[in-house]
Length: 135
Image (cartoon, rainbow, N blue to C red; front, side):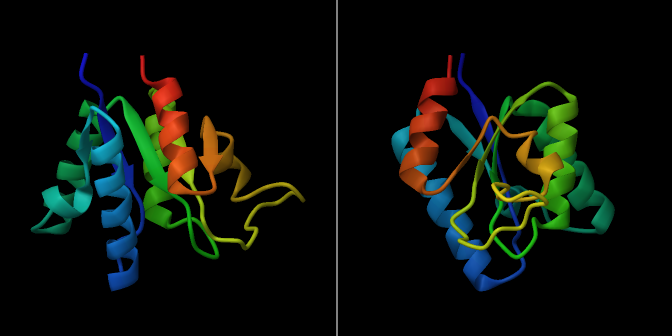
């Protein structure tokens, strides 16, 4: 079975897009999976973008969520919750050294963090975790 990974994360600045592209390329290099990135599939009206992303979420079985920033991006948080409600695997990556959670050891909001099987600190750790979770 070929796994499909949905790459979730903010896409509002050149830096965010460049980082997501780096994650995308590393996943493609290291894993034998198809990676779907909303930046490459969604354009048009708000409704068209929403539907394209929703369809992509439904067809993927694993999510990688980029969780950097002072808080998790709203759209990313929504996608994580939607994916989790379907019982699908979510792995996060947070390279940001700031803590954004409610508890001392929290990395991000507890609802997002507890939805993830892990929150990796770098790309190498993320790829190792993904390799372990791919059947």
